[in-house]
Image (cartoon, rainbow, N blue to C red):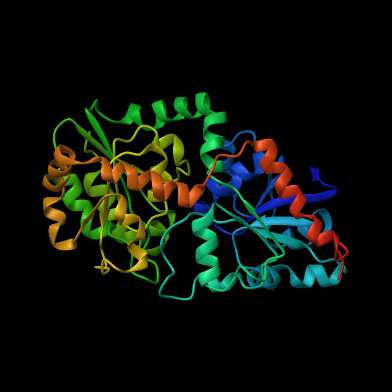
Length: 370
């Protein structure tokens, strides 16, 4: 597919399943293919994003194939890493492939460690809204950009456009595996990153064993949890696998189709919390590493109730009390944070045109050559 006379594609290099729900909708928006190097990723994209054209490329040939065929690559890795992988192919073919960075979530990680600083060599970036722009400015990786495009909540727009398909998938793959319930709770823990953000191993036993009657608990596993500590994770899954009201979701990249059926959100530092703002429903945050109330990493916590590790055993009592007395203040705060994070909705023709316009910064240099 060519856009604005430049052949473009998106790239998932390696077993990075958590990137699928961010890059696959972008591929449908831009009508461009998705290059992947793992068969498992290709199968997941084919199953859950059937309109996306998948190019499965072997690690040995992906560099030459990508550089030969494409001028612009959308990705979620830093430019330094891209050049490390594709430098020799670009040099050999005497062609520079330009890149556009796409975010893979809007979590509050990275304030206290080097994180966003890795984007200091990007030329063009896609951002959700003003919140991400402000964070990039704070990390001094915004000023060097030649262009940026505000996406808004484009993944929710993608869901709305494919709602019938995804409601069928949820009915069969999620609701069909659970007992009927009055309320559905989603627990979406992050993985154990450099900031030790994950609450999964500490909180899961409390959440499962104390689950109230007539409630369903859906636990969406971050793909990196299974890679990081497979034995410990699998042991926990096996322990609770036969619970009729609990469902562990793995190899399931969809976010918004799942969030639509959820009544209560429980998270820690996962970016899914920002996605859940779309629905303005009750939110609870497990403060696993005991962040101070003034810590910028707790920004989203203002949209609900923070729960300390020593109180995990009382989580459902806390939730019940909150639901009885929740005021409009929390709803108003969720709406304000949503607006700051995503801004106004953009229709897809407008958004596609803005992204294509950003290609012009590459052409001013002489697109495609060293």
